[in-house]
Image 1 (tube, rainbow, N blue to C red):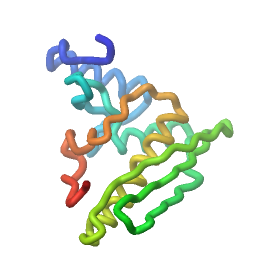
Image 2: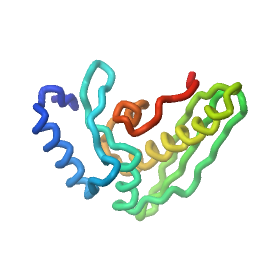
Image 3: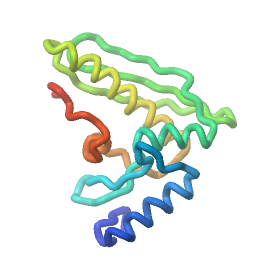
Image 4: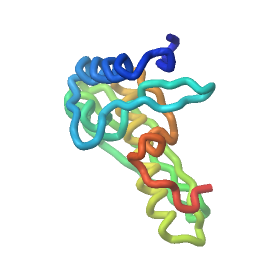
Length: 151
């Protein structure tokens, strides 16, 4: 399948998601921990959501130890997150989000989105989960709002 599950029928897709969730010791709740989203080339791939990454961090004993936000006021928020595993290993990764400097509401949303991206990437990188990074995965799943004025 090369990571593409388009060939699977609906029941097999659900079975795959349940297997991934069970193997990672995650729980189905109000927000799904793993979903299927469209990736480059039209592939349909498993994607761990923010809720799933947060659960995975808890199950694996990962702590976020730093979140550095840089907003120079010119339309981009950059965030660098640092996480530590229970055995002391660390990982650092980043996330960014554009905003319209003339629309204040987009700035606060950009800070939130960039922070979520950085946290998720750092956790998944530290744990070596193998899940895809799809920038708009949460949006595709209906778990995130449509960006307001995002460039």
